[in-house]
Image (cartoon, rainbow, N blue to C red; front, top):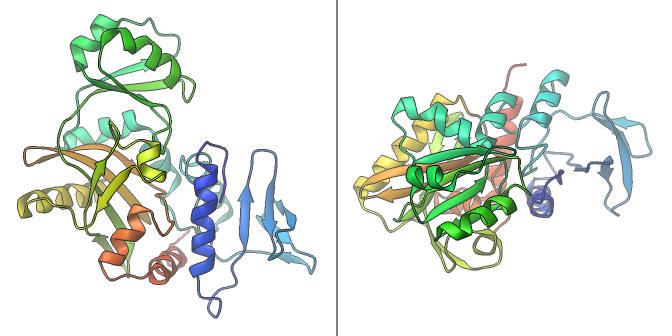
Length: 319
């Protein structure tokens, strides 16, 4: 848990929830805090013990502890963008998240949507911009129109996302988004019902969880809406059976096409009955208030069963 990004504090909350729900009769669980300047294991008192990065072991004072499985609860870098996955794969340590390529791909909004479009996955009109590119507002707005969204390409929790209503606001939004990432995705604003669809591996099968409708008090589902109570999350979503069937089929197809593992949560906006994909989260929030755990509970899956199933699935992986 933890990580290097602005999502570290959310990750710590997710990690604590997972740690508290794992059955201590079945598992010896340890909290590992990943920071830029150190990787440490924590004992019950919160004391820190350095991680040996050669084999991902920790000596808590009675000899090195090695791990049969890693439960990845890091949102953002390096746990959601492929770095930790590649590290664990090199060490042949099972982990609960998708493999490194899928993590890197899903973390990159532009690349993800480009890969999925040949499979018929609909998305908003978009314009790609990199730091150092010439800013041509006319060309951008000819492509995406107003209002539009300026998004940091590789960030989560709506960091670096801005809704632009007038051309004069565009340059400032781009400058602010570049503070989060040096690649941007500028998208046409889609107006319609927004939903979030969790897809997981559960008891050996791909399972689409009950759909959540997102009703934000703010302009869009931003950080405040996600984490500070400025939204209503309704599970199951108030959508038609046809819409529910379509978005569930698309979410399951995306999961299979990408050869995903573990948890995923994808965001869509309906234009009529057609779901348009916004992004996929490969390490979604896991606090009691987070969307995926809410969806699991609506499906009759307790948090303990949800988390322990992820460990069981990881231990069955072949390396």
